[in-house]
Length: 219
Image (tube, rainbow, N blue to C red; front, side, top):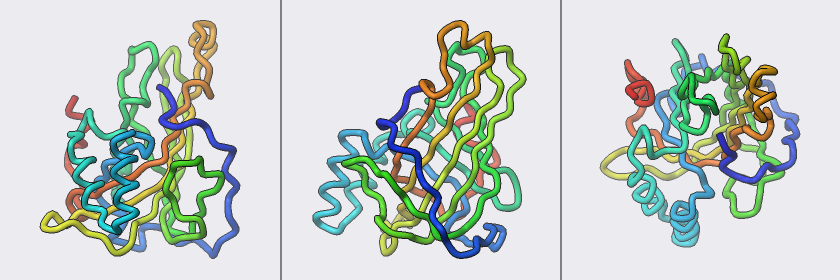
């Protein structure tokens, strides 16, 4: 695993209004989302042009060139009545013995979120916005990996939907830090050095689609 961006300073949690659980059935944050790193040069250039024109279709078309499961930086599925998961080719066993990890999104809440200490070149709202926040958890009984944890924030970009595909646009940040056992640490692996941190654009390809089989699990 390698960080998709340079590590920013630790985020400070904002003071916000009382959070509501996503089991309140907010349709905006249910389904499968493909995440794309904002630091990808082609995607960054497309986003820059879109901000000038106000038309985000170019960004969607650029991201669509990266087919899942290998193209997106990550893929999440949010199912408020079942399991919510995150998969990424960059979140995996560095020794290759386990493969891509199935990370769970836990304690998902809809609330006012705030992105702080955002690196230069990243596009995120500067003030509090409505979105979702979740904790990431990975459990493992492997000989080298003793689980991992992290955080996830995402908000919907208002006023944009592609036609005729009805695709919604989102943006956010995800951070995941593995926890290695002494065995892996003796081999030179360090938790923070292998952390995955990514500022992303995300697209929900089909509204409220919660697949029976996650695209990443087909590998």
